[in-house]
Image 1 (tube, rainbow over the protein chains, first blue to last red):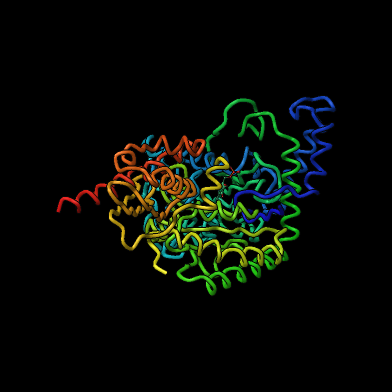
Image 2 (tube, protein in one colour):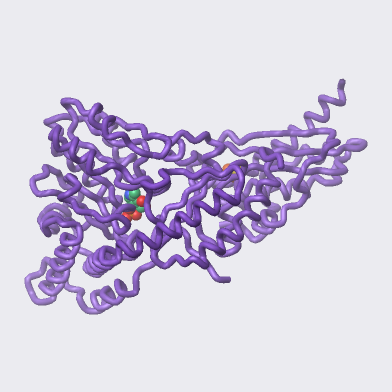
Length: 386
Length: 123
Ligand SMILES: Cc1ncc(COP(=O)(O)O)c(C=O)c1O
Ligand code: FES
């Protein structure tokens, strides 16, 4: 069976050109970058070059880039690191109710350790109001963390504006750009961010690698303690092949950004329009225009997401849902609840995420099959009256 | 994660629908995830002569309700009342741990439908 992948927001396949630069690293460049002899120096050189590349694509300085084990670690580090390093100044953190769990659960953890966290609401499109951010700042506020773009509903936040407010008030600002990076042009200087998390596996790079951008001068504690790697800020022997692959992925995704975003937006809007027109009682979740180029998220009334995913999987289509039945925790997605959906509507949520390899033919296949799948499940639903 | 039997029951569910002249109807909701299951029974001389279901829920919920209808069809009420969720799970060849609660819905919906029938019978 031909399979069609529509879950690029979950993870992406590795770009062949990334793989090509990684293989020789795995095969030959095994030296410990901290060693003085040539084996070590060669690995060190690869890492330095990679750091230069990542810095260049973000318009940062190389010494502002720190490699981590991925987006999750970068988020944890940014939040816990600044919280602990600045607790003499205050204990208040501002975030939003729609962050990724890597941010939300980290904030919850800090609440157990004496920090106070404000979780800002969002509007029906999942948008944070920068004025809410401004009004929540108080004497004790030490950090604002707002995601650049939401992983579920794709809404893009007014990061630059929030950054300005943070600057005016002399509060550190972190953004989780794991979803945005590679889809939206990012210039850390222009954005007024102090810290930013990015991840390799969302941009056709390897998994288990990412980076935290830390602007020069930000006061931050270490999260991972041990050796003196990453300028004594992030311990652990570097994963040279992953770092090299990650840098290559950053470079490629930036080179092709405009073109691939345009193509994704066209497929996205085509898909959304078709679904809304051809299926009754469906709503679009997220902002109609301020959304990630590849994100389609709809709620299909009267049916449940996992059963839709299962039906799609049986014909080779891979998608995702925020329904309670898919969460393991048996709660519907906190993002869908935050935009005001009832449990029932959140239950029928379905996310298709489009990537650089998605074709019109694949989208058409989904659009052709989806109505019958939905009808079949609706006919089984006690909530649906045909 | 699902057995072939679960997938088969999900893809080709038996006894989907409603019975306009049902003698007993049971509707239950899962407090865990918010799903809803509805069972319709046609009963003659304490024997289940027809059964239909409707489910708003995950793949496991659909599969368990479907197989449960097969398991009680033609059975006496006394036999049907003895059906437990673990019997349903066994019949499906197992369910992932986090999906076991869905099978409880099937058991409860059948019990609720029988109760509904009995309460009407008394009147
Ligand atoms: C918005 C967001 N933040 C953080 C992460 C975590 O990144 P990683 O999988 O690299 O740890 C993800 C991906 O799941 C994400 O979508
Ligand atoms: S019915 Fe919700 S998890 Fe099965």
